[in-house]
Length: 469
Image (cartoon, rainbow, N blue to C red; front, side, top):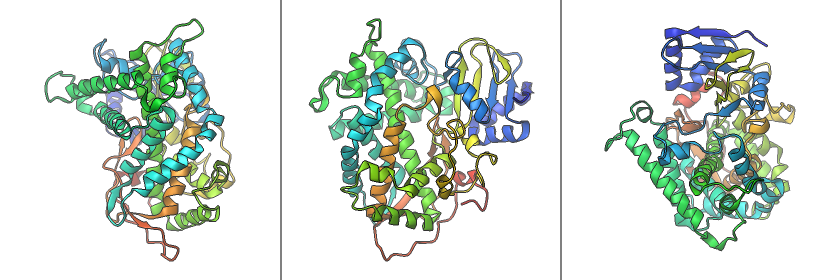
């Protein structure tokens, strides 16, 4: 247990301003300068304190404290009660108690290992069909391509949506709604006027909620009532026979849907960036997949048993953690990390910083997939999917989809990130490439030599030491 270092007054406000600009770098500077337990006290003005904690022990304490803490959520723009925006913000990521339990009970059967394994032939079918349509010989945004693929995985296999137009509409509307929520102007200047970012958030919230309610009311694809998450959630009742109201179910579905595809598409995108900068590892991975047999008939067990494929994905999740920061609010006055906090105080932990601790990972800023052939970190030392009771319920589904997507891509194409392209990162609850990642795909050739790594341009590479990538 460490003593807390307290940052007060104007300095605390400056730290918060820095956090708003670049949360990852700000939290890293605070940790390096002030240690693993830092409390921000703002003085007069009504703002509650913030507690930042770094390290496996603190991760464990926070993630197990479900009776004292709830997650802060992914959509930050506040709105009046009764609005679609206010409803959507209170999704399964922010709720606790009976409503959260009702959601968890409804979706859990769809994410168990047996159900995930049963989906594997369809995962393979979707991946091969989608990637076969990717154009060759000209730059494409692989982030956008991976996002479309991950949406098909989630919407078809979890939600039972088989109509391509409806899948695109759901995905596009959810993606644009999420982006609007991460406009700083919308959060700071809540003016409900035409053309203002805040109005845009409210309008997109109305559109998204209406679309989800329509999807819930339909029987897309002729699916039986309990065969997918939409049907189960719409018809689930808790132990006392209470069901979720349609609007509340729509909020939970919206948050769950974004989580179901966005972290997968981000991880695959960063994996291709890292592999482009490590062509020898990319060549070895491609060879491993090819030696395992035709991807068209490969089993889930064979794919899961490829050591380098597993290691590349784990190392990508460690270095470029999709959710680099986890925020929580205290449900009541309590003690966290040895620090007394009032109700509604903010507590922050960082998987990203934990994954960069040299006492846990040798040469932590370097892309070294081979480390995973030897190390077995604990749940709270390695937490790309969070941990404990807060662990992402869809982590098995995501792992299967990522393995198949990466294997299908590398089996069919040689992928090269465009040399000279600037790759910037942006924090929007998840760490996304700000303007996508342009890459050129060429039909895979056994005789083509690995190309030299592209230039390192953009803020994504600020997360590495100069010699690390």
